[in-house]
Image (cartoon, rainbow, N blue to C red; front, side, top):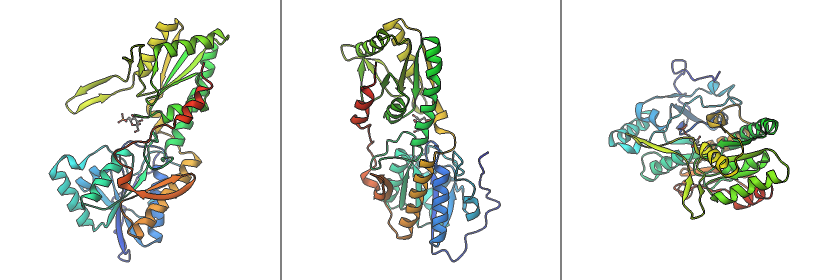
Length: 363
Ligand code: F6P
């Protein structure tokens, strides 16, 4: 079970801390968040910085759900998935009152800045809070989607790819035993990083992802060619936001969306659309597996634990040196920091070379 912080147990931060910062996790959870939390708290403590735990993302800062983060509670969590700080998708800019409450909480706690462990959305909020001089932030990029611009890899991505690859491996045996086309729908928001990586690692016979729109005819040809070679099954990996077009370029399969009072709701289901299409185009029995939130769970891989630790340590060091408005990043194996405002408002798409590589093995 995930150990959680207890507000009652926590004692006020010692007076000798020369600086105080808040620490939060925002957006969807992923493996490796606790490893990053541990690293920030441990390194900050060594540098004389007191850390306040902000619960449930920016919502916690607005609602005053904030408490000192004692060192001992950053212990025993390195290998645990999820986030002991909990998380939410909450935008404090949506109301003036919320923004005012956030400002007051920062002042009340005497926070000189925030470390925000988040994906594209939370990092954008961190950037806006810094730019509007509400509170200065340092970002740590995390998301299974790996779509944060400015870093080669985000925390959580490598574990999600492991999980998805393992699923593809397992589905291979059933597909082969029963002569079926197996469509595996993976997450990834508007990019196909998980699809391309797990598809490549799992030997997918076709990968569909947002960066590469395929038409019905190519899909039909790839599957039929494979079966003409004597193969009796296929594995098709589909990213949740992939689209298929017909010969006139009109989208015939895409993620189903509906609306409620808060706006559009995206849902899984593109895999089902692709499966229907394959059945119609080829006549082969086609089954669908939606991996869903399984991809966000589990214990982080060693790569994610190490990446999260490197990012967390750097974030604490940046805070000690008053280097705000930065995001930790990894580029070509080197850990560094980049200005937050240069990476937000855009997403990192899949390198076409990765897709080309996978493409050699299609059909
Ligand atoms: O950003 C992580 C992610 O898991 C995406 O891959 C997916 O589109 C989305 O979050 C799902 O979000 P929710 O859990 O809010 O449905």
